[in-house]
Amino acid sequence: MVLLYQADCTVLKLNFYPLPYDASLRQAINRQELENDSKEIQKPGIMKALVIGSHFYLENMDGVTITPKKLKLEYRPPEMQQQYLELFARGMKGDLKLSLKDEKNEKEIVWEAFIRKEELKFTVSDPLEDEKDSTDAGACRQTQKTMEAGSSSKISGMHFIERHREELIRRTCNVKGVLDILYGIVLHNEQYQKILSRKTSQDKMRELYSLLPSWNDDCKDRLYEALKIKEKHLIDDLEKKWRHR
Image (tube, rainbow, N blue to C red):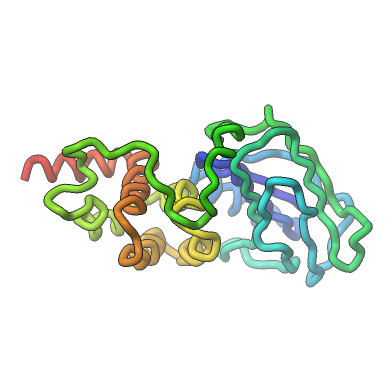
């Protein structure tokens, strides 16, 4: 079976799960993705069955980065992290054609589908604006708006995310949503996948914080803004407590 989700972030990011047919796998993945505010995109199932152990890949599409390049079909219990292909693009100018192929027979399409722009939820930025941004994915871009004087992101020389490190690690729930916003701007794919591989939200946040020594203030501001979007009540609570100290 194929499960496809659009992640809730400001770029086009699709999580593509080709899996052995198992209702418990579907339930586990659906629960995980919906908890992170992803949207399921329903498409027809596999056209031709893949054999466990076979390698497969999605055909390249212009303007779309696919990671990893290929996967090996295997069964993992529902409680384990499932494999998926990540499709990433900074904009969508037309329909996407997804073609899944078996590595042993590259001429044969195992599964295919069209994703139309109208099917997606577009918090995704406009492709014409995206073309103006020539910065490589994974590098911290210069913040487009200067933080206002007196902003709560940095007070007395200490940044908000450093000052509240312990509570942010302990209380942040939607870590994946935060990571999705940072992906391609602050985090490159290897860092993103490594953080996601941690079992608990606390472990994910600790892994994220291990990157902080190499970050400048722009990167820290990006994390602060992502937390304000995905964990608004938590950030409001921490800022309120700080103001009343």
